[in-house]
Length: 417
Image (cartoon, rainbow, N blue to C red; front, side):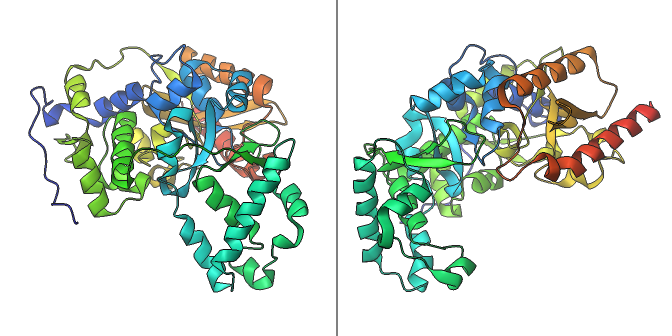
């Protein structure tokens, strides 16, 4: 049944006037909602992901920095949390992979990419559904007999001829064998889980083990409403379009989910309408913006920017027109990692492992607080990670052009001052 068109809910008692919801205030509000103001200090990994949002995982270091920036959690503890299954890496919203707390796993898996979509590619290559079903059962049997998690190569060796090579035509369609589809279906059903082969989240090598996660008691509509409720809590408010980008819901699904979550529509000084949770509307009306610097270096895929893909809104108006910044200000996803002060992007950075240092470009003269935080994150990367990879294929060689560009921009800004 198609839901009725969603209309703005009644104004709450303490609805803030639109003129007060300036870009500056909304940046500081999002900063607070993300726990980057120190409010999540001392929290566990699970608590950070529950409050600030799941950490996007693409074989990069974002999950580690997400936890270090908000709660000071070091890599050793994060890896221990992964090993003990307190946090897990799963495909969920839009079929993308995130690191999240175990309490969210069952309903979050329901939001992952439809397993049937992956099979449709195999169907066009002449693979019968029964063949994949049989392979799934053989995978489960093999993992049950294994003394430790098995990576795809080991599984392929164990399964032998049960895994079919799909030849050149399969390569063209991104399906070289039938094994990845079987693994994807089993993972989406919570019957197996993918674990880092060496225990680290920033190195794209995985193995699989049995899981048998109990199914969520929620139905599909309830799971979508749960995601919207979490999403609006993580962001502090988002436009309809931004929520659709993150969730990949249809217009009808988005409207139904917002209504089920009790979301209200709030006008801003810029003329946008933000959907917010009623409790957050009340809190925003009395929210006090931080008076002093709060500096953080974050990953380009940090939830603060990624959940709404609004990097341009996180720049001050004068910085959007900085010559050296150029078209970067117009990009939804910045090519470098951002430096923030209370929700405003004040610079960009990359890590140069050869010199074991961060290469920053701060748009204006760096304050002692900025210099100090850069040094702290630089030391953390050296001691905990060794390098800071943005994604699985990131390497010192591939990022050298960006490192050089940042160094040149920083030199130009210093000369201009």
